[in-house]
Picture 1 (cartoon, rainbow, N blue to C red):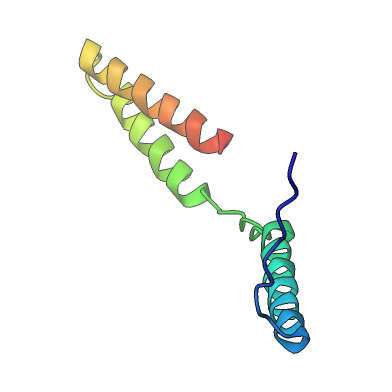
Picture 2 (tube, rainbow, N blue to C red; picture 1 turned 180 degrees about the horizontal axis):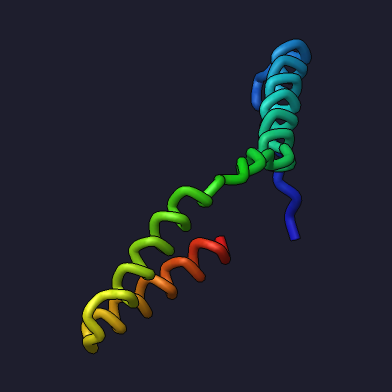
Length: 88
Protein backbone atom coordinates (compact mmCIF):
# COMPACT_ATOMS: atom_id res chain seq x y z
CA UNK A 1 0.00 0.00 0.00
CA UNK A 2 1.26 3.42 -0.92
CA UNK A 3 1.47 6.09 1.75
CA UNK A 4 0.18 9.40 0.53
CA UNK A 5 1.62 12.51 2.09
CA UNK A 6 -0.80 14.52 4.25
CA UNK A 7 -0.94 18.04 2.86
CA UNK A 8 -0.14 20.85 5.23
CA UNK A 9 -3.34 22.84 5.97
CA UNK A 10 -1.33 26.05 6.03
CA UNK A 11 -2.30 27.03 9.58
CA UNK A 12 0.24 28.75 11.73
CA UNK A 13 0.79 27.66 15.30
CA UNK A 14 -0.98 30.78 16.64
CA UNK A 15 -4.03 30.06 14.47
CA UNK A 16 -4.13 26.46 15.68
CA UNK A 17 -3.91 27.65 19.28
CA UNK A 18 -6.72 30.17 18.70
CA UNK A 19 -9.00 27.47 17.26
CA UNK A 20 -8.07 25.09 20.08
CA UNK A 21 -8.94 27.74 22.67
CA UNK A 22 -12.27 28.55 20.99
CA UNK A 23 -13.12 24.86 20.72
CA UNK A 24 -12.26 24.26 24.38
CA UNK A 25 -14.36 27.26 25.47
CA UNK A 26 -17.35 26.19 23.36
CA UNK A 27 -17.10 22.58 24.54
CA UNK A 28 -16.83 23.66 28.20
CA UNK A 29 -19.89 25.91 27.97
CA UNK A 30 -21.80 23.14 26.17
CA UNK A 31 -20.96 20.61 28.88
CA UNK A 32 -21.76 23.12 31.63
CA UNK A 33 -25.16 23.79 30.04
CA UNK A 34 -25.96 20.08 29.83
CA UNK A 35 -24.82 19.24 33.34
CA UNK A 36 -26.32 22.32 34.99
CA UNK A 37 -28.62 21.21 37.82
CA UNK A 38 -32.30 21.76 37.20
CA UNK A 39 -33.71 24.01 39.87
CA UNK A 40 -37.45 23.72 40.27
CA UNK A 41 -39.24 26.19 42.48
CA UNK A 42 -40.86 24.76 45.59
CA UNK A 43 -44.61 24.83 45.28
CA UNK A 44 -46.30 27.03 47.84
CA UNK A 45 -48.99 25.28 49.83
CA UNK A 46 -52.43 26.54 48.85
CA UNK A 47 -55.10 26.93 51.49
CA UNK A 48 -58.36 25.44 50.20
CA UNK A 49 -60.30 25.83 53.45
CA UNK A 50 -62.65 28.55 52.15
CA UNK A 51 -63.49 26.53 49.03
CA UNK A 52 -64.06 23.39 51.10
CA UNK A 53 -66.34 25.31 53.49
CA UNK A 54 -68.42 26.64 50.60
CA UNK A 55 -68.67 23.19 49.02
CA UNK A 56 -69.73 21.60 52.30
CA UNK A 57 -72.46 24.24 52.72
CA UNK A 58 -73.66 23.60 49.15
CA UNK A 59 -73.60 19.84 49.73
CA UNK A 60 -75.66 20.19 52.90
CA UNK A 61 -78.22 22.34 51.01
CA UNK A 62 -78.63 19.61 48.40
CA UNK A 63 -78.98 16.90 51.05
CA UNK A 64 -81.42 18.95 53.18
CA UNK A 65 -83.58 19.96 50.21
CA UNK A 66 -86.23 17.93 48.44
CA UNK A 67 -85.01 14.34 48.40
CA UNK A 68 -84.64 13.56 44.73
CA UNK A 69 -82.17 11.62 42.63
CA UNK A 70 -80.77 14.84 41.15
CA UNK A 71 -80.08 16.32 44.59
CA UNK A 72 -78.41 13.12 45.81
CA UNK A 73 -76.30 12.99 42.65
CA UNK A 74 -75.29 16.65 43.02
CA UNK A 75 -74.35 16.07 46.65
CA UNK A 76 -72.26 13.04 45.64
CA UNK A 77 -70.48 15.05 42.94
CA UNK A 78 -69.73 17.82 45.44
CA UNK A 79 -68.41 15.24 47.93
CA UNK A 80 -66.13 13.83 45.23
CA UNK A 81 -64.89 17.32 44.34
CA UNK A 82 -64.11 17.91 48.02
CA UNK A 83 -62.17 14.63 48.19
CA UNK A 84 -60.11 15.62 45.16
CA UNK A 85 -59.36 19.08 46.61
CA UNK A 86 -58.35 17.53 49.94
CA UNK A 87 -56.13 15.08 48.04
CA UNK A 88 -54.28 17.92 46.33
